[in-house]
Length: 195
Image (cartoon, rainbow, N blue to C red):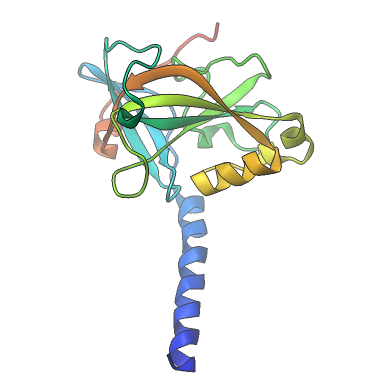
């Protein structure tokens, strides 16, 4: 490969990485559950790209302990951000007052949380999701990792390796699917009391 072609490819790669950061920073992040027909819809994050996606959960579907065979489930990482975080609450997928799950946590008071999931062709995707809570450690508080939003599996694994977060399989699963932003914006915003 010639030197000009190599330089051009390197610049294109660098621009694509810079552009991903700009895209995430310029995303309008939606927050909270919305009702639409007999379902609820909420924002989530594609754990491969860090892009916003939306999850649709049918009402009255049984949720609870994992009953599906392991190959038929995929992880849903629920990153729990403390009130001490400097991140804006409006950027999180859910807040304690606009969703009916992860409203409290025994380790620290919650500001909000994100749902990181795989999508077809870029991650581990199934309709049955095994919920993995992601909690910040004392080190994550001390080194201000709580002030950086985790948007990809690469970031999550790096934070876990560094000791800033721990992954906790809570033994809980539920069914949901990926849907469009149109379904979300046409839904009715929901509010909840924090227990």
